[in-house]
Length: 231
Image 1 (tube, rainbow, N blue to C red):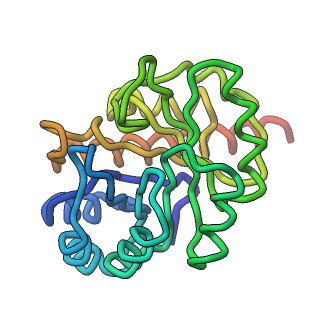
Image 2 (image 1 turned 60 degrees about the vertical axis):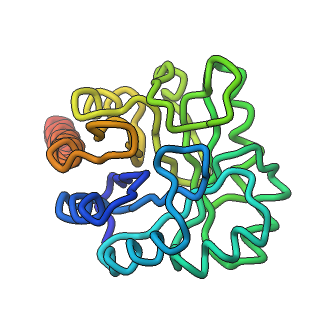
């Protein structure tokens, strides 16, 4: 069962990384099907890693502008609970994928400045969940997972129809502040819990999840104190 703050560990590419995420108590496990990423896994790897994860956390299949053939093959290999679309998929494409494959969809939206917030409304009706990642500052063939943060103040007071995850530049040292500043319902980390590109560090994974949970508990206590004081 998900706790109130969703925690996603993305880019899992080895059995020990899956074990670390599960042991730490992550809610969502991300597996990347994008060959330009250092976290890319093959269909065979995905099958083994997904089986290792079992039912303790939801499996998320991440693709970038994938066609139906690749999506079908990857879904068959991983049997995910969510598809994370991290490319330039249009709202129409998101809706079509959701209808065709019957899997819940997370749509990633790159945020660099306030103008990018206009994209949120285009996807809020067609995706099951949104993810806000830092938009690359320069042209790149990797639209996400670059380890940079954006200005979190852009999300203050944000109202969406669907739940959302905050990504981009998160690590154990800043996740609590990120949750406080944005009020994010969930967080997504990849490079921030690695010892090298694509290599998860079990201690960093555990520390990240622990600090995110601690921030959640502190917020709940603060809310209770405020309620009691108002009586």
